[in-house]
Image (cartoon, rainbow, N blue to C red; front, top):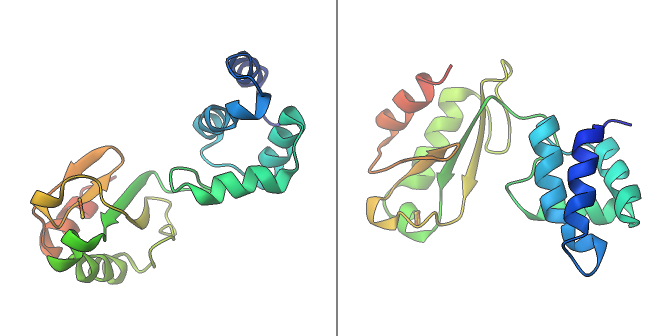
Length: 155
Ligand code: FES
């Protein structure tokens, strides 16, 4: 058993809020990810048992939403918005530049575990394109040099 008793208790409490227990799967995934940093296959199997569903059904949800991770992540999540308004203002080139700068592709994590890089759909800051977020913090009106400075400042 990998999911702690405390988290199991929280999940069971959430299940009671829904007419069917699987309705609490999203909150449960948030709780487990907060505890473990990502949802491994082992954790998905435990959740599946708890929810009385197949492990693949858990992984389908994990891999559908980009807020869930199926593998260990870096200490910082750097996500470049690549939706149309940001792309028209250079976001894709900015992302490619960050890939070269960090030596990883979008969807990967630096070897030192410092940064996980990715792209994302519109974050509602189109007027300030191109932009990226680091965790919950938005950085706007960027160019590649500014984006590199933001990434380099992350410890
Ligand atoms: S398209 Fe990038 S914030 Fe909307």
